[in-house]
Image 1 (cartoon, rainbow, N blue to C red):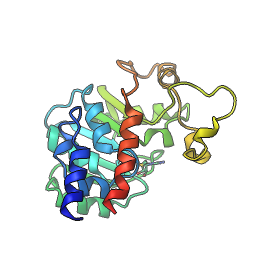
Image 2: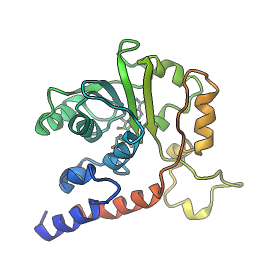
Image 3: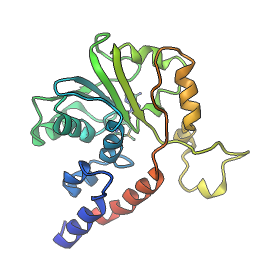
Length: 226
Ligand SMILES: C[S@@+](CC[C@H](N)C(=O)[O-])C[C@H]1O[C@@H](n2cnc3c(N)ncnc32)[C@H](O)[C@@H]1O
């Protein structure tokens, strides 16, 4: 990538509200992105998590493990970087290159048959992944058991600010993949989805201020990196 483009991307990726994410090289962030910026989402999520050095953290659906590397570097936690579509060996190479081989462990596993001991994790986090499997009414029960009884679970998913009245609006057709996007729900839907299980105490369920703008901004950057 030539220097002026790298500089421009660096500027675009440097947002005041995400100071930790701004430290990471733009080429690396764009090369490993799989949707919205995983670092921005994880940084926002971590504002409400209580992560302490040495904690065991499951990064569920970590994709190319950027968020797992981020967690290890920024919070000094041990991270199990679990994904399905991305091979564990590919993630291991990225983890080693990032210098966190002692802290991040790549695991290839399907969400419905996770290989962990019950109560093993201090915290489970997940960005832009849980909606692929977690809308199943029974899923939380099989998932929450991997965290300690007093542990934390935090997810960020793409969603709707309000439900459609009738059919999907035509302006969304260009972006909307019906095979995937029908698992997008409102924050009220998610709160109720978890609350009714009585398995967890919900401390916070909210929407990211201007989250859609961040996603759009990030989408606009991707072609610049080609
Ligand atoms: C859109 S990608 C996001 C990846 C990463 N969290 C990020 O933000 O860059 C969704 C991730 O969820 C994972 N995923 C989807 N369905 C899954 C399943 N059934 N079991 C485990 N992981 C799953 C995929 O492997 C994929 O990497």
